[in-house]
Image 1 (cartoon, rainbow over the protein chains, first blue to last red):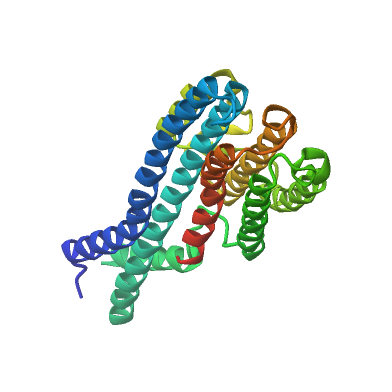
Image 2 (cartoon, rainbow over the protein chains, first blue to last red; image 1 turned 60 degrees about the horizontal axis):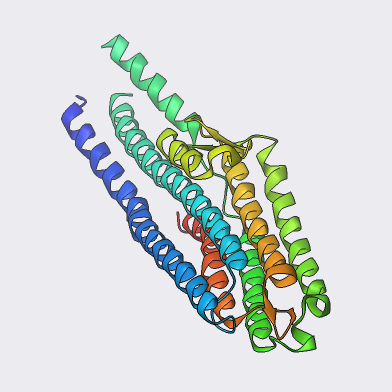
Length: 114
Length: 186
């Protein structure tokens, strides 16, 4: 009974790639959408403050705009913390897939030898 | 051959002892459902306020109890995540931490740190941080309602403000939800 390192390596790589891909796809879908929203929001804040300065019944005041801008900064932190968290989840998934492959590979070899 | 056998037994024992590797805390149904409820209540409140702008029912004084109730709901969720974090800080990957520090400058929270030694506790601390950020958003909405927005001379949430503030606040709320959904699906 021999251990085929190449075969195990291939299985590990496949397992890691498949598992990480699922998690990574979630990040790829999530992050750009949120960053796009941020740019749209910042543009909207500028427009609404400008509207208010022309007609105080429209848009909102610079004071409100300033608070909304600081809210956007907080939202940016939320997105970055979530991306970190999602990355960890993807890594955890990949690691556990690798462990599963290793368990199966070494379990089979041992069963054959013993 | 004997050495190889020993190695295989060692590796198998090691792997079976490890079980599964945990870098993040388990899915928490209480936080997941709690945030969804919070989101529904906050969105409804803001929509109502936008329609009541300029009327007595839409002033801050007439509605501050809603803010208190929403804040209490968040405090319960933050408390839950904080207990699970065992006092550890939320650690971000170095590159992301540097970006956050650039954005926040000297306002970077002490509870946010740079590091790669992810543990289930530090992951829970990130949960607590995400929820604390939602609370920060709520306090800023309260500030706008109480002090900066005016309709017919009384405190209000203007229609234009309501749209922008909900889009922004929902980004922070979604950040909590998306992490819990990802944990649930693994």
